[in-house]
Image (cartoon, rainbow over all chains, first blue to last red; front, side, top):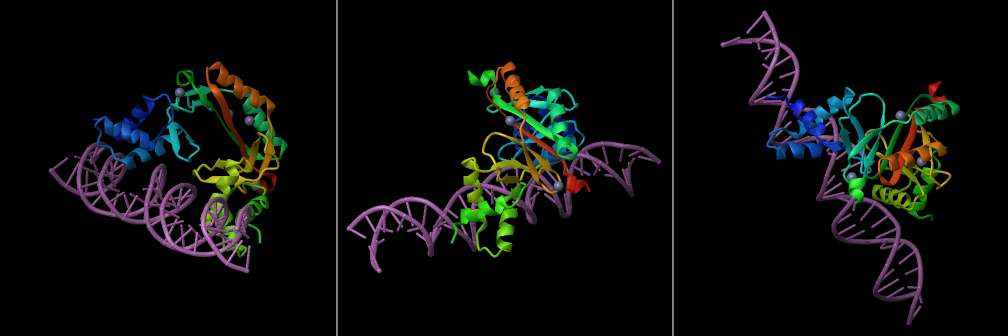
Length: 124
Length: 124
DNA sequence: TGAGTTTTGACAATCATTTTCACTTTCGTC
DNA sequence: GACGAAAGTGAAAATGATTGTCAAAACTCA
Ligand SMILES: [Zn+2]
Ligand SMILES: [Zn+2]
Ligand SMILES: [Zn+2]
Ligand SMILES: [Zn+2]
């Protein structure tokens, strides 16, 4: 019997997009699992803390998670309709953000960059 | 007597950083206003809808607002400690985001870009 | 097998935000 | 100046995601 956290990880990995704790909970229960919502939240929290999954906030403030292929720093191109995401990189953006921060005397500079759109499939 | 919404706008303008509805409500009440929390939320909602103020989400999912100098598209360099923000522009980033979206067949491409750091004053 | 540790999940508690709903205030009109 | 519609207000209740509590279940390992 796989551990609960493993089940959450698998459910998240099966999706190519960002999913909320509530989404995953619904999926798991639909598959017959008896997992509790609390456990889903705890699993996501742990995976997010360890950097195993990426997390971002929807416009409504709900946290959504994604199991990305890499744990290296990267950004996402996210479909506004189906939430499917593509991992993207932008060396120029990385440099720009660091420079902007330095120019204004800011230290410990980090940034958030996400690109949204309607994917080809959802545009059709 | 100024309208309630005007009071909210003024309270927000007095700050150079991002403030939450709860923050502004506390400020206004501390200044002796009898304004209700609901009204603060409604005022911010309206101003945000009309593009008069910018809104973003904290890591905790709380919505924070800012009365920026311009209503044109721009981004922010935000202090992680005091939430003070500086308006910034990045033509290169604008192009990059649009291109990335197009390359992957996405339409209606938009983006969110925010830079965080510790401002000079808070670093001291 | 048994004590000690970790994981789990039902349920209650938080907390920001939204809804309701019963006033007030504002405004155009007579 | 009075009057009814429309917009603005706010106290209190409702929502909804997320977190805290705590006792039961599963696991570890001597
Ligand atoms: Zn899509
Ligand atoms: Zn980056
Ligand atoms: Zn600061
Ligand atoms: Zn931009």
